[in-house]
Amino acid sequence: MRILITNDDGINAPGLKVLHEIATEIAGPGGEVWTVAPAFEQSGVGHCISYTHPTLIAELGPRRFAAEGSPADCVLAGIYDVMSQARPDLVLSGVNRGNNAAQNVLYSGTIGGAMEAALQGVPAIALSQFLGARTQVLSDPFEAARLHGVRVVRALLDKGLWDTNDDYQLFYNVNFPPCPAADVKGSKVVAQGWRPGTYFGVEPHNAPNGLRFLWIKGGAQQVRTGPGTDVDANMDDYIAITPMRADLTAHDRLSDLEALLA
Image 1 (cartoon, rainbow, N blue to C red):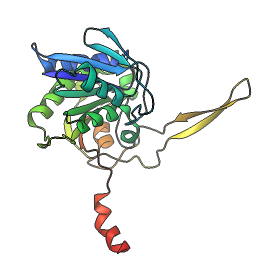
Image 2 (image 1 turned 180 degrees about the vertical axis):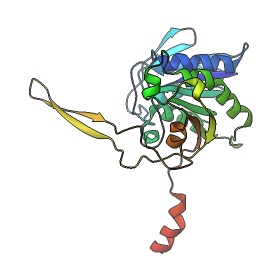
Image 3 (image 1 turned 60 degrees about the vertical axis):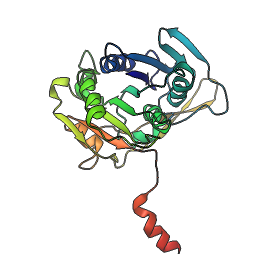
Image 4 (image 1 turned 90 degrees about the horizontal axis):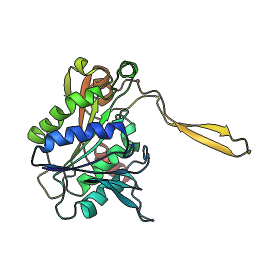
């Protein structure tokens, strides 16, 4: 199996090393793992692509490349340049430092990389490690992802639902709980949740030269979402697995809106 890995924390992020370990085991002795990751931090860029300017790409080692662009840019670079002779069989994005659950999904570059792969017709899985008080005391905060990642990816490849048409728009979002690996209770298939009262905001600062800057800051991450959703499963020490599509349509409102506007 030929696997392309990327992330949004950057080419030197510790989570990418964890993902490389996972991908290497999944690929097997005769497989290949290729890395195309952002040269610099790209957290929060979502599904952004560098449409209006070129992306510099550099080979750092065998099958290891850094691109000055977003995770989606990296996936495009991997498919159409780095691995152009033979497309990847699978794209793995992560392992993100922090959860990509609830509203975070909409901002996540990790999700953006997996989504772009799905749009390109390549099976894709995004993986993220929820952080919290119990992971802060661990020597390896990615412990849950490192020890359980291979099992989850293999389960999705062997038993997961994948679109049978040409575009593989279905992809998976996996969040590992904020606990030691030994405390993980199992996996749950759940919906994307919503943290009530949790929003991004800004914190203004004045520089010594008088210029005004705004820092974007997020809300509390430990706020539970509803039953059967991602954050709720993670807070109960379960791995959250969410099937996703690149479709923002509110399907449950289509018929009602059509009737109202008729």
